[in-house]
Structure formats: C-alpha cells, structure tokens
Image (cartoon, rainbow, N blue to C red; front, side):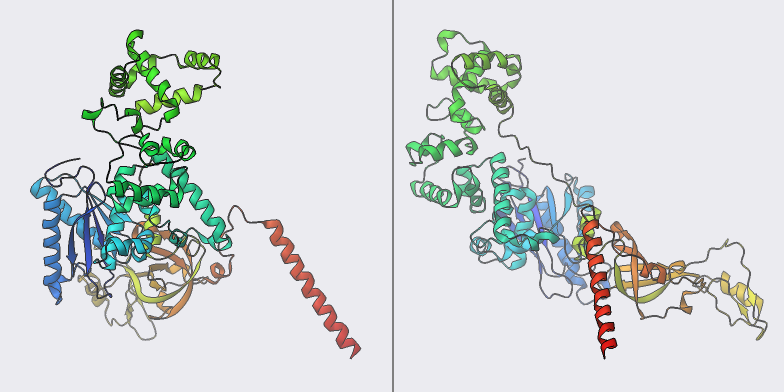
Length: 563
C-alpha cells in the first residue's frame, strides 16, 4: 500500500500504550511505517480518564483535547491498523478510539481502520531489554511498549526474535503453567529450534537487516550462521557499504565458507529490481527458496515451459529472460512433465528428485510465499484473561473466590406487572409491597401509589452483586445464595460482607461471572481434572497415605497399651 500519507510502502500501524488511571504517567501513540521504523509519536496525557465523566472533572478539558489531537493525528497519517496494549482499562480506550475512527469514516470518508487488542507480555519484556534502550534511548517505557505493540502486529516473528539474546529474555515469556518444571537449558533448546524452523520458512533478507536494526536478530537463525557468524556477516556488510546483489557474492566478496554457504544459501532472500534483471551480476532465482545447486534445473524448467529453441538455451540473456517470463506467467509450468524430468535425472545418476522438482515449480509460482498461520484477533476469552491478570489454570469454572458484597441486584417493576398481591401483616396491620418487600404501608392505596410512581419501587431482589479480589464483578442469584429456600437476599447477606463463592459461569465478553455460595456447591469437588490426570497414580498415593495413617494409629495404640 502506498499513498500520500507515507513515502514507504506497506502497512502503517499506530501502537498505543496507556497506563491505568491510578498511574500518574501519560500514554503514548507511536506510528510505524511498512518497514517497522517509527515515523511519528503523540503524547496522550489525559487519555486514560473516562470520557463520560470528562465534563464533571478537573481533567475534563485535557481529555477532550487528547481526543481531538488523536483524531487529527489519525486523519493526517491514516494508519491501516491501531494496536492497543491489552492491559488495565484497555477496553475503554478501545471504545474511545472506535468512536474517533467511526466519526472520521463518516465525516472524511477515510478507509476503514482496524482496531486490535495486543497481548502486552512481549512488549513489557522488550521495553526493558538492552536492544530497546539502545534503539530508543530517548523514549519513555510507555513509548517503547507502544513501538513493540505496533511491530508485533506488523510481523510478530521479527519482534519475538528481538528477545533472543545472550541474556535469554525470551525465556521470561509466560510459556504456561508447566514452564517451572522444564530445565531452562532444555526450554532454550526447544525455543531455539522452533525459531530456526520458522525463520527459515520465511527467509532472511540480509540487505534489509543491514538497513534496519530491529530486523538483525533474525539473521542468527538462518541455517549455517548462528549468532556469531550472523553478527560477523552483518558487520562486514556494513563495513563494505555494499548491497548484496547475489547469493554467490557471499563467497566471492564476503569470504563465507563453502559449507556454511551451502547451508544458508536457500534461506537468504535477495530482492532485485526488475530493471536490473538482465545484469549478469544479478540472479532472479536469488529471490526464491530454490537452492543454488538446483538453479540449472529451475532454468531448464523455465526454458522448456516457454519452448525456446535448443540453440538459444546457452545464452545468459535467454536464461534470464526465460526466468523473468515464467515468474510473470507461472501457469505455463503446469504443462511440464516433471516425472519424466525426474526419470531423466536418474539416468544421469542423480537420486530421485521428484519432490525437489515439484518444490521448484511451487517456488517459481509464488516466490518466498509466507506460509505462516494467518493473524487472528484476540478471542473474548483471551482478552478476558489478559485484562483480569488471570489464566485458565488459576480462574475457571469450579474455582472458589473471595467476594465482597457491594449491592443488591433488583429487577425494576413494569407497568403491566401481573399478579401483584400485597400482603397485610395481621399483627400490626401494615401492608407489604410484594416486589421490594417494604412493609410499612398503613393503607392499601399507598402500595398502589408506591408501585405506580416511577422510581419509587426499586423492584424485586433477584440476587446480590459482588466484587472479586481480582477486580472482576460477579452476580449471585437468590437461588444460589443458600441451600435453604429464601425470597429476600438481605435475610442472609449484608452489604460489605465478605463471602466465599464458587464460579459456575464466566461471561467473557461482559467481564463478569456467575457464582454460588451454597454450602453444597462449596463442598463439592473443585476444579475438574484435565485429560492428562493420572487417576491410577492419584489412587495409589491416596491408599499409601491411608495405610501410613492406619499404621501410625496402630503404633499409638501399642504404646498406650504398653504404658
């Protein structure tokens, strides 16, 4: 994508990081271009405050000004995506930004802008790393987090590679609850092997790495290089101030060893300009995953597909032109009989190369195609756990939580409420409202006035509202307060009372939970066992503990008898 908003093609992303309301720290927005470099920043001092309460508070004018400046910033730079650090009150920041984007789309007819929540675990580690403090020495921690948020949306593999350093920052990511039982050396080995696989699937652009500091950690995972050889190669490329124009130059100009070259050549990606495609120093196949050892087969396939004359095949211009034409129209390769080609190679004492030939055809059809899993936005469940600082292991259905009652939940009466039957207390003669259970009406007519007057009757109590110790709000229905039947929650529960309750349902999109504080539920088995729970081992441990307890009691009885 290229337009007047940026001189660099690609996706422009605006990363936003804002501290929680209790933190006296401004928020920041950072815009990166298609190459991952920072283009512009914006400071949002009051953006963390609520828009709805802005007119009633001292900081209201500041909030309104931040919203106005952010709106002008988005209109001027037209980012394709806005990434928000998914932490604290991010759900409210997303709502404010969505209102800004919707207004711009209606008023100025700009293209739609996606708004995404981003997991902050990587950004928080990157912000403290030496690389971040070197590249963005004058930035605040929140600005560096915003940069990482935006870069992760652009290319997560590049951003995760930045944590692969000698201090092993990558191991500090939340790898799961079982991370603690895996030795760090073994975990590092597994993670490194996975990075090697993924980076070589995508390919490494050495010229891009020389020009962009944040991309350089990718080079260490190219097959045959590693951290030391990769760093040395980048240093040599910078010193010579030359652009790498061909894979062969790694050997001729940069003295890369033959064995190392054979290992890494197929994964080094070199983007050449189309205008230079006939230059004898350039090779179109260097921009593919095809290994230099098989360039001759790829060229032969292109010439055969285009049906060039045999006397023209050996000229350089013909080979380059054939490759250029076949890359422009790769469908012509579909007519080739690659099985016959493989049989011919076997006659020349090559091993079976059918798979290689089909891979060459696929690569000529789509050079360095990105085969990674497509991006997907955070699900409601993932967003829920990020914002409440919990995990599926620590907070799920069946978990018991400490709650504090802060309100009685009531259902407002409707004008056509059926079966309204006031009750009279025969002892004192007072009437009782059947909805709110208020029982101090001396006359029946006062109950009807109380019910008909808007806002006078608070309605029927249907349960209690509670706040959990992790900040979430919950609801306990009247039927889930006690095993005994009750009609009024206030008979058992008082405001500001602390109670234990079991989670019976989690409503992820509304950030609330349904709970029960009935004794039968609290005494029932807790969290359900996972698929890998060793029932036999657990039963053996239970029997051993029972046997030890029985033996201990027997010995105590023997001692008592002897005494």
